[in-house]
Length: 221
Image (cartoon, rainbow, N blue to C red):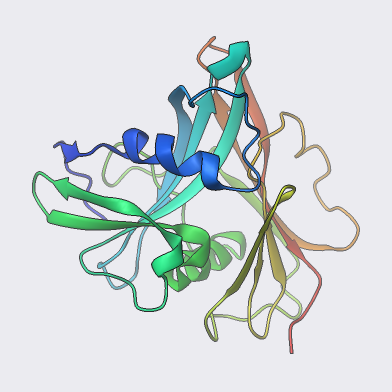
């Protein structure tokens, strides 16, 4: 079980992401600097206990509109070889020291645990408290053709529509980056091998729920 420390991070995650988000092709620019509020999310445990895994929802209030983004992150105690382009930044953790923070779509530990979550082999954890599960995160999965573990380094493509993660020997994972309420209404959509849905709450207090990730029935060579 991952331990969540009640301490400081300098710079903070929101500060780092304010600079990072506008560099992403799926970010919907308002012509202003992002004004970010944390709106929800959950965590997953690394079986090895080395990597922090967080699925964060951030709502950008800049430009007079609200847009909510899904930002999966990993926190590491040392750089991840070969993932320099996925580095969001570094931060000084009040207990653990320097942490390297990565776009989790590029991190094989996060991708492996995301697959485990959709397959029912992992449990979503509360974003803020240690040892507390988050039953509001739900998944549906067609087990046929899915690997029991990540078999290699994922291939990641970012576009204006979102992020596709191709899993060696398994399906392609479509990560929703711009969250849309109500996208989870179909439990078993045609052509999908699995789905992950969860909720978030925007700064105006409105509670929403939608699609966070979809496993598409495409097997890479």
